[in-house]
Image (cartoon, rainbow, N blue to C red; front, side):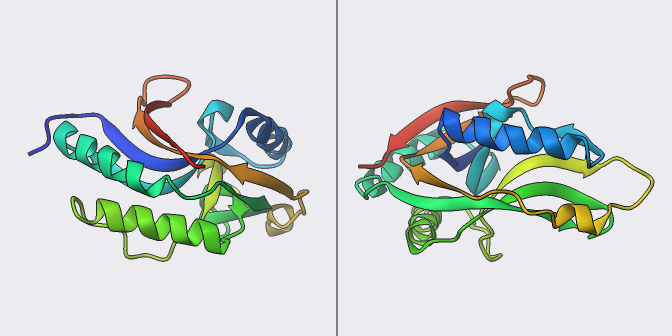
Length: 183
């Protein structure tokens, strides 16, 4: 039984400079694409697993187990290419791609192994990304050529994973519930 109505997820936390860089891209995208919801720059992250509502006891056990995998070293990866989820002409999500490095793949696998003891894990393939916007708002279809415009790429350092608690009524919707620094 769930003793919490709050929803949670595990994510790779991004540093402030990376969030600023992504926000600059997002500002350009706002002039080009018509989405209903634009992600607050403080909420940029790379999702590892979405729980939804989960018992606090279970979440505490997961957090304790996640401490074991954060003995791994921090690592770098590249971000930068725009893409979408959903129908190509009326997408649900606009996002920036993340290179799926062996280190990120390994971290994702370890997270799935830890949480798999407590909850069902997602069987879909892992598509690491950073969401910029959600819910296509226009009655017209998206111009595919605009989606393919090349953004600069950026190498970023991954130093931390976090458990976020979701607050849908706030501007910054994701607040850190627990955090785990990599070496």
